[in-house]
Amino acid sequence: QVQLVESGGGLVQAGGSLRLSCAASGIFISRNTMGWYRQAPGKQRELVARIISGGGTYYADSVKGRFTISRDNARNTVYLQMNSLKPEDTAVYYCRCTVTSLNGYWGQGTQVTVSS
Image (cartoon, rainbow, N blue to C red; front, top):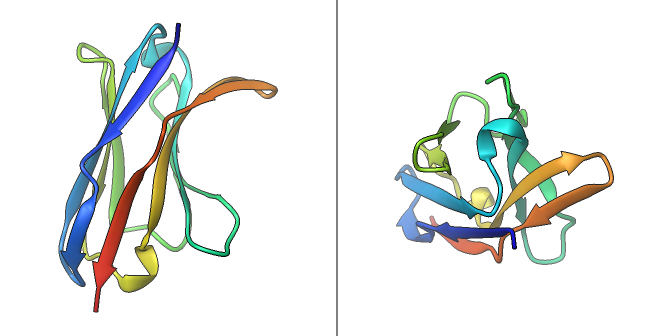
């Protein structure tokens, strides 16, 4: 049974930092594409960052230079370091493991709220 458990969300002032964690079980993150998505109220879920099995990374333009995705294979955990947070970063953040283009797993989400 695959489980992705996010943690690290919370309330922070603009300009602050948070680090999100996604602990995986039942699957090896090093063998799959891991991503962080977010969904703000009234908006569609969007890709924030992802890391592929080879280690390459991708970032949405809105977070480039501020967010960093990384993984610890020994802990089977993916991280999202978020710096210089803005109110528009407020959303529920979800971890996703993409196994194939048609198959993947989602975590339950963690709320990030950035106050101005």
